[in-house]
Amino acid sequence: QVQLVESGGGLVQAGGSLRLSCVASGSISSIVVMGWYRQAPGKERELVATMTSGSTYYASSVRGRFTISRDDAINTVSLQMNSLKPVDTAVYYCSADVRTSGMRYWGQGTLVTVSS
Image (tube, rainbow, N blue to C red; front, side, top):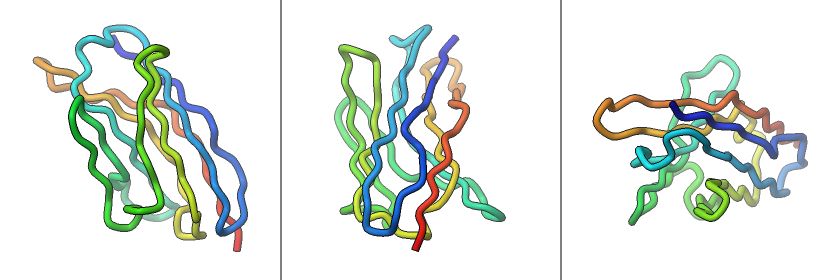
């Protein structure tokens, strides 16, 4: 119903920046919340940021460094990551929550590695 394709992951040194992108297709009109999650090795998947039509939310660990945004013209949600730290190293996943069914769709994940 909803397909998510992520890109932008890679290797970056501490203090550097990366921009992740997530392109949505399918039943786009049913999406009510989009978000970014991450999962570091040996840890639980955690929420990074979310965006609705009128608000954004950031985890305290990334607030002030990361920015979530969207471009409706190309059905894309992005995550701008600045001042990256080694603790940010993780697989980052794009998510889309749809109305009525309450289902959550996931992208394939993209690896971000921050070296010290």
